[in-house]
Amino acid sequence: MAQQQQPLTAASLIAAASAESYAVTSRSLELWRYRGLLPRPTRRPSGRAVWLYPAGTDRQLLRLLHWRNKTRRHEQIRIALWIEGFPIDLESVRGVLVDIVDAWQRALAADLPSGATTEDIASVIDAFAAKAAGMRGRSPIPRAARMTAAERSRAYGYLLSVVLGNEDELRRRKDDVVLAERLLGLRRGHGDGMAAMIPLDAAARRVARLPTPAEARDVIASATAEEFELVRRFVQVFVIWLPILAPILLVNEGDKARDLLKIAGSMFSEQAPEVFPYLIVALLISLHAKALGSGELVPLIAALAPGRVDLDLLSELPPNERGQALRQLPAERAKILGEGLKTRRAGSRDQTPADPSRQSSR
Image (cartoon, rainbow, N blue to C red; front, side):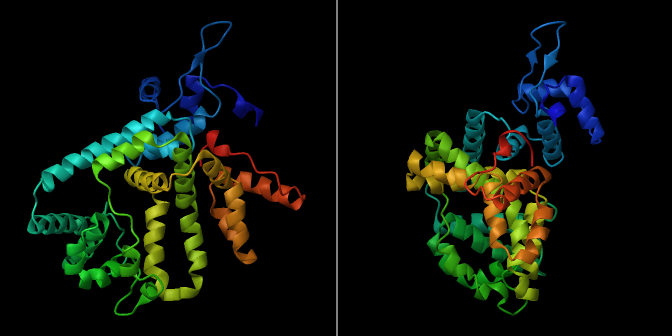
C-alpha cells in the first residue's frame, strides 16, 4: 500500500498501462496532461531532474484508457473521469457542458427554426424517431423487445414528444404509449408486463421537460460547486447500483421484468460516455430549481459518500442477497464498504468511511 502512495514517473505510468495491455507513449501522456485529463507532474526538489506525477495517477490513467476505448472525444472522457471522482477541474467540466448546450442550440435552430408550424415540429420528431429506430450498435435504448421498424419509430416519436414537452404531439401520439412501453421493456407482447406497476403515460407527466438552451446555459454557469458535487455523486451511485439492484428488486416479477432488466443491464454495464453530460445537465437543472442552500446540500453530499451510501443500500437488501451485491461492486468501492462493515460490527456507527473517489478509480 505504501508503494501506491509514492509519486510516479512517466516510465512507471507507461509500465502500469502496459501491464493492462495498453500501449502508451510519453507523447500520449503529454497530450492528456495538456487536455487536463491527467494531473501535471512536478520536478523532484533535489538531485537530477525527474518529473513526478501525484500518487493515484496510474489509476486515473487506466480509467482514461478504459473510456478511450469507448470514445476518442476528450470532452466525454473528461466528464467520465470527473464523475468517477478524479481531480478534474470543475470549470473545465462547466465548459464541456456549455459546449454541448451550444451544439444542441445549433441543432434546434437548424431543425426547428423560429416560427416552426405544428406540422414542422411533427416532421422533425418523426425524422429523429426514424433515425433512432434504425440504429443498432449505438441505439439510444438497447433492443430487447421484438418490434417492427415502424413500431420502434412510433415508440421513439412518443418518447421525444415527452422530452420536448409538446402536448399537441403527445395527444396526437397517445396510442403509441403502448409501443413506447414495449421499447423500454415495461410491456411484453400483448400483456401489461411492468407497465401495470409503472404506467408510462402517468410517468410522462412527471418527466422534466427540456429547458431552452439559454436556461440550461444559465444553470450550468451559476450552479455552485456543492450542486455539482451532489450531482456527481448521485450519477456515480446510479450507474453503479442500478444494475445491481434491479435484478434483486424485480426477482419476483419473473418473465414480466425480463426485457426491462436486459435494457438496464445493457445500458449501465457498458456505459456510454456520451450519455453522461445530458444526465448531468438534467439533474443540475432539477436540483438548481430547488434552490437548496449550502446547509441543506452538505448533508446530502455526505450521505452519498462512497462507502456510506453503499452500506445504506446494502442494508436495505435481504441478507441472502447482500453477498451477491457486494461481489458486483467495483473493487475499490467494495474495499471501502468492507471497512465500513467492520466499523459497524465494532459498534462505531457514527464513523463514516473515507471518500475514496478523490483518490481512486471505480
